[in-house]
Image 1: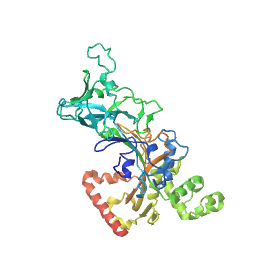
Image 2: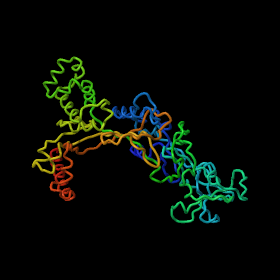
Image 3: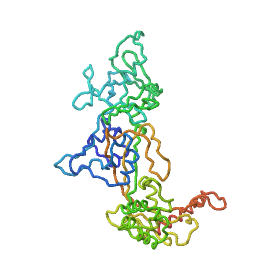
Image 4: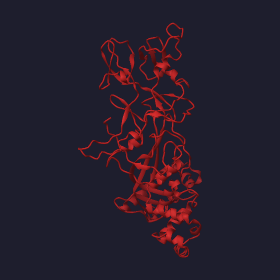
Length: 481
């Protein structure tokens, strides 16, 4: 396939295992094992240790990641722009492999021949030449089957069509039928009741029947994007289910997203956590200095960080309830909130290649009049530059897999899904940059912002709050300029 798509689309709707409609073909994006990632400059490694550790900690016992260390995050293949070397690509295979032929004038009305891909005319495999010598353009059939675990396969049309057929004489003793099958449309809509698969032997099947539970049989676990059968027995309760190629439920990408934090902040948080029992009671810069003086191990661990930086980070961690028994990297949303709500005048660095650059604005800038509608906003941060890393780690079909946790503070990885490769030890990722504002809401105050005093209709107060925030945003932009 020569069509170019954006890197972000590979991490979303066009990842391994997804189906793509091309002008004359339908293809299936192959797994990571089939991506052209060899040679210098064909991809770029995205450094995001927190996301890599998170994926390793939560997926290390899962088929979606097979590695004894955090996975390497790589961009999809990148065109180096060198005319002397071929551009790397992502391989795709023809899928489905059943085709419906356009009707010729002498063909039966509203009937199209069903043929296999290997029956099409080489080398382009776009037309079928019938027994009458006439060529007919072939298009991929709209229907395939799969399960919610991500498995996918062609429908075994001959087996399904003749499964309950007793033969032309009704004896049921005939062998496998090899006669011509047809796709027959009796209406102009896409209603399954108007579409039938029929055979010259007399067997007939309405697509509506294929929606019956168990009609397509158990799922054998086919993984055509990898080219094998799942070694684990598929536990899909409904077995194989009818799937329309162009439907939105054919592919639910599982993507983990994380905001990049300055490495020094992450490292400082880990060092503070290691000495939490010592630092928990420190309330001033002087107490931090005394703790360093009388604890050589603490002094060595905090070397390179100022007492002011330690105190600021310590207060932010304490304000969120302190540390837990888990690594800070396991709760990335909390780490991001702690940093942006720290109150530090400068967050990150003001450099062209900085991953994070933000400022905590003085309240006099965005709320000079002390507007009551803004009393629930504790602080406002102007984020001038922010990097988000998105990583694809699996997918499902028919419906998204439930998340391991529904906590708002957690990234929430899906509990199950199909792998991107046979033994994935790296995962595709992209980085995106943006800007905006981060308001920190005071604890216990959201209700006062949602429900106005006196029991008034909250919808009447919404425009006023919106105007207040608009004024603050305008002032903040002017301050930034």
